[in-house]
Length: 459
Image 1 (cartoon, one colour):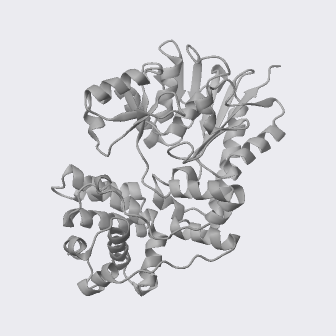
Image 2 (cartoon, rainbow, N blue to C red; image 1 turned 180 degrees about the vertical axis):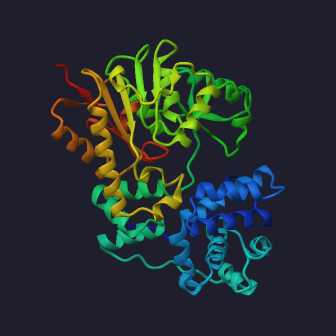
């Protein structure tokens, strides 16, 4: 497989507006990440503390901060090619500044005339150990394309470098997915993800698209989920649209929408039924389930994280969904369907949280698997006969998906696996793999998701 290492530059419209102050905030974020802080928290802090940034500058900060984590392996290779190995930089600030300079060169196509003013930064963000001449050399020196080696192991190594994945994780993915699927999956998880939305209420996507068009917002349907759509241009005007303010839209990944659909019994609806969302998190799927059960149904939401559940409460209140409650504990014996959106490695969400791939390990995957198996067994012990459990993750690793479900079925003969895609129209089948939902990018746009549906046998 011939994979060029050096990328084509992004479209400028995707980046927002670069400036010296924006570069400072982006670098402060990346420095905090390198010191162990989660990217989301570091970015929120940097944006809060940055004074006077405009909306497009803030957009640039967010994009740049994610990109520096997303592409750090490739950026470090470029640094080594140019004689500046990361190991030479004693200061974290040095490493971040080198990455930023190379990112602006390789991924934005900028020259020193544009990059130079951006990196005239205040200390301590700009250490005195890196002079302008050094940074200018990183931008102006020729950068040759390393020759592609031959053999399966070389292909895996090149994929890991081009798409900035840890070697161990690339090796594991290569054991699971054929070469063509692997390259597309890694490329998708190594790029800034598009924003996807769910039209509300269900079945009104065409009307929502027409309303957005009247407001001058270019959007288009995403065929592989019935209510999914995406904005067709780089603007964020959709968030100021009357349609958005009327709660006719919810930001939600396509695979996440498909997990909610997997909660539908074959050939039936959820209208009027009771559903539990036991790992509700910030409430994204809770909202989707609430729309499916309708005003006469109910959704019982819970989560072990009080902070995340507080976010879910706020969203439910914002959307005015009176059918959602937050009992503790959630009475699982009183519901028809339980969604177990289990804690996982998040390997399907690395495009949104690129810093996480550098924190994962094989040991962590095994620990997630143990947690998932325990959680699924706990839920199974409480549901009534005839009830369904939908087990879901945002992982692309079988250890957290098929393996958990298959081991559960071996230990719990009172449950049966029910095919997720049964009765779905052809355009939705793109995310179906045998009895499972396996939404893999780029075939299904957005992140990677998995779901299996289990039913407790009567008697």
